[in-house]
Length: 119
Image 1: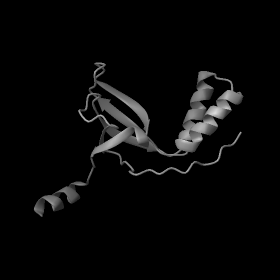
Image 2 (image 1 turned 180 degrees about the horizontal axis):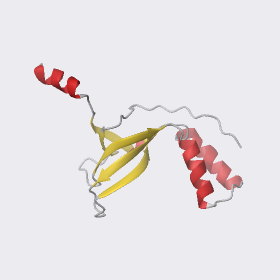
Image 3 (image 1 turned 90 degrees about the vertical axis):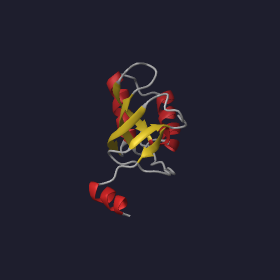
């Protein structure tokens, strides 16, 4: 079954190297993360994951995918390398949707940073 591409209103695109936090985690209680990678085929990632788990595609799964597609699928997902947090897991890599994270610090080239420091 095919799903229509979802239009999303992504207020912010993240770049590899950006420093991020979980949305609304003002005090960084869940740690901070570094964006490692970006994929634009999140619906394919989830479909592959469902197949790997051996979940049979029935009407409930198709309905759930269709509903999710309205909001998140066909949007960018980011591989974030997390450090810290309360569960004592020092480092972990997690694929996250754009609406789950907020920017703490934008990555810049060394040339751009030098230019800003000279101002």
